[in-house]
Length: 365
Image (cartoon, rainbow, N blue to C red):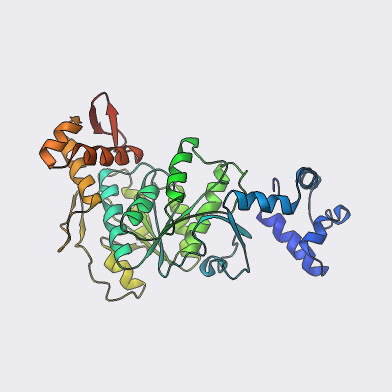
């Protein structure tokens, strides 16, 4: 509801408990709203909302949009999230729910990752999913989307936490992408603490970060600026008593200082998923697919090349300049269709761009 945030709602709940009444009854008595802590503008917002629809009508609209709702205290509310200091009162959900993540791990990072960052994210998420982890992230450009995508390709489960309502996707061009991912049940689930009509704001993304950290046993950072939303997520995870891990960056990377600061503050230096899994007490924490080294991908032991390996091979070929799909097909033994599918996927991630008949690495790489 416009104008009613976490603190205002907390005040309403406290008032209702003190006076042994229900929120539904409180909503029907405007004369008590001021005493419950609502300002004049908030009272006007509630009256406007009530005049436009009833709660029952609104509930039907949510059901028609295939949106599930869970509230703090409900049996299907995520238990880890309920432990934080300021858990969302309500979660709006699209996708499988309840979703069972026995080992929820957040993988977060910059919206403009380097090639090294992309390789690191793919490698680590692949290892984590192989160990049974579910991947939590923020479904935004860069590391977030790559984490979700890699988890799905490995047939793992993943949760995207949004900083806006489902009807106000940000950026608007992401609407189609979100819809495609939402169809990948039961492995993809989206959640938001915001009603469908709430637009993205700077503060909504900051609030979203606490949910990412709160849902997860650990937060793994893959490339982050010194001042960024990723740093906020990592700081909150530490405050919640959860494990924080960071992938070291090369000293030539623009993100070196960001991850180095986290490691210096106590984050677990993570070059492969095995060490993080050991800290979480999972199995033997053995190295699942070799170690991560700067600038290149170590060979996976006894694993055949999957879709992500194909993409990495294509990326390497662009180091010498723009190439056509036909040329890539000829030197990789992939069909034109396979090449175009991979290039389109990389384009959505911002890795490559197309100019005429040629493809090249994005200037953001």
